Image 1: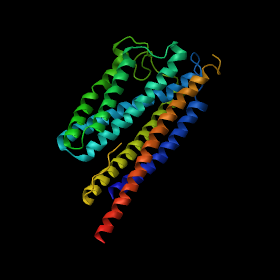
Image 2 (image 1 turned 60 degrees about the vertical axis):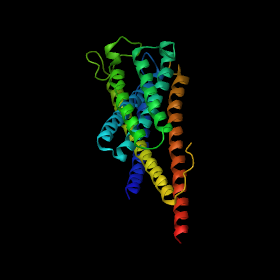
Image 3 (image 1 turned 90 degrees about the vertical axis):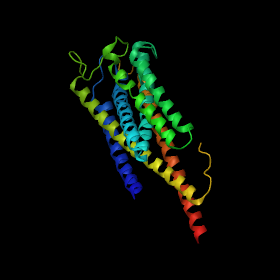
Image 4 (image 1 turned 180 degrees about the horizontal axis):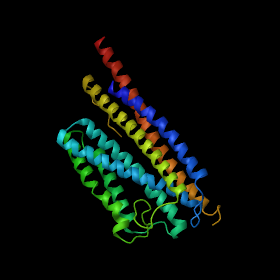
Length: 236
Length: 51
């Protein structure tokens, strides 16, 4: 019953997310004017920044769910942490790929080891390690406990990534949101960015629900194998 | 700045986004389908044993 409700919620969230993405694409490619110095390639910014924000949110949810899991040992929290970390890695991959694609024509280089880029890569590696840990450790409470600890410690890098362009001089552009005096965006650009953030948030919710459904289905399969007294096949 | 300049990079940026998104969605949906099939088969086997 809970699975059916979640399945329906995932379908509704997916439909809303697609609508929001179409709206965001209209804003990016039709509504917002071309940036004067960078030209059309600046439009990558509207999907790059929201992807980064959503990856932070995903890792924050993983952090909270992991923390709560260690206190309560509820399987649902373990599932939420895993699903959220996986989606965080997906969005962080978008950030790490779209960033260099924007940087090459603007900076003349694909990559530089500045504080923002390096801490973001470290963040991605931490959560890839988290997912590998989950994939390779045998099932059981030890796996969930270890994953929760990594999920909590890994989140410590998120504030460092966020603050890196404030604490150090970096090649990466200075913050345009909450960056203090002299920062900010022209109104059409900030409107477009807001719409893109809403779209990415909707996409994140849809993916999270879908991923939780899949994990609950996996639990059901494991339960049925136990009931049938049959060894489950090796998971790839 | 010419509007046509660096359009290939803009295309590459959005292509990367869609590739990652659809790749991930494909993974989730194929796993979901496989699990639902597995549940169906296991339930049938359990019902057969009881019958």
